[in-house]
Image 1 (cartoon, rainbow, N blue to C red):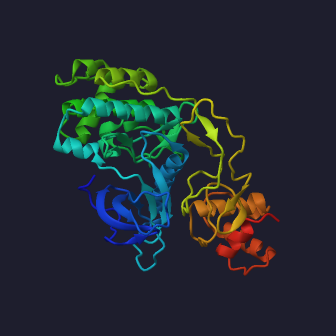
Image 2: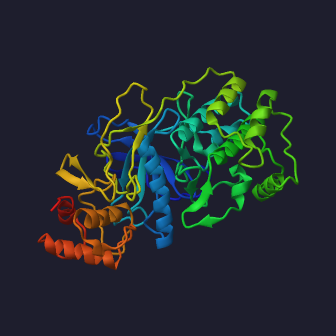
Length: 445
């Protein structure tokens, strides 16, 4: 990922919140990651160094902006709701407010745990590294933690496996992740073909995206294991397109799976089961797969995961300009807690049922999701999570149904509803949701 063009160029020394940008770590199609150091002692709970992931919004078309917002929201939602040992940790989310730098203005910034490097970089230096089996056991453990919580990664590959200073592994880059809804999840139609199962290479796409199953991650793990242990892909071809064609022929029974002779015997059946041609035949139980992988790697057994329970919703401490959750449904935060922990009873807010929360600066107010915006101005033509929350509060807290559909787009109906609310609240009826309007929106009656 480091050799790709810079999606967001941020100069060294640039300040974002309490962070000062240092060196560029990596860049991909949708984001650029920089090291940053914490300036001052105002944030005692934050590490002194972190990785800041910039997702651009400043110089894009409306369609690109909508797509980038969705990718950012997916990652923020997962990392805000799920805390697990093998998943990268998110400390905060920020939004760049800098009109003098339009290429940065409005960019979403994720403040993440800093890694030493990626598996991708390691494989470039050392194909089939000696530590490969142990790394695969940790990767599989992370996949199990993710699936256990009801999520599909959707883009498991070496570039999205981070290596920490202590040698441990973290799964990262969850902008294509999706939460399960029954037997499926819905993800954007963007993935890495070499790690995409045959049934998804040319799958149908509806308005919600591509329907994927956890077995898509199992296939990706099988490909990744073959690459880590042998330095080669499991299907023939001199390029991505050729290998995708080979995967399609294999799924149709027109080509056999020919694993590398360098693949250790202990791993052959594991990789073969992960790379079954159809999702029905694939090893879908990550708990059982993890035990097999740990045995093949010769590592100690990881702890059995506890039953997940909803954790009490609290007012989010992140001063985020992008919401972590879809406001149309209830959101719960999951954590790996002991089995004897007493479950909390409070439910999180939803769009239809806003809930009260305490803001350290502004006091008590209502929220319709994970947003705690009080002073971020939005106006007609804007879109995103702040617009969605304003629409929810207008419609379900203040009864202004003329706002129309809660869709996150600040169109004419939303503008008219804001003006109506401002007149009712005795505010300047300018149709702009600024600090005074937010304060009134968060006050019932």
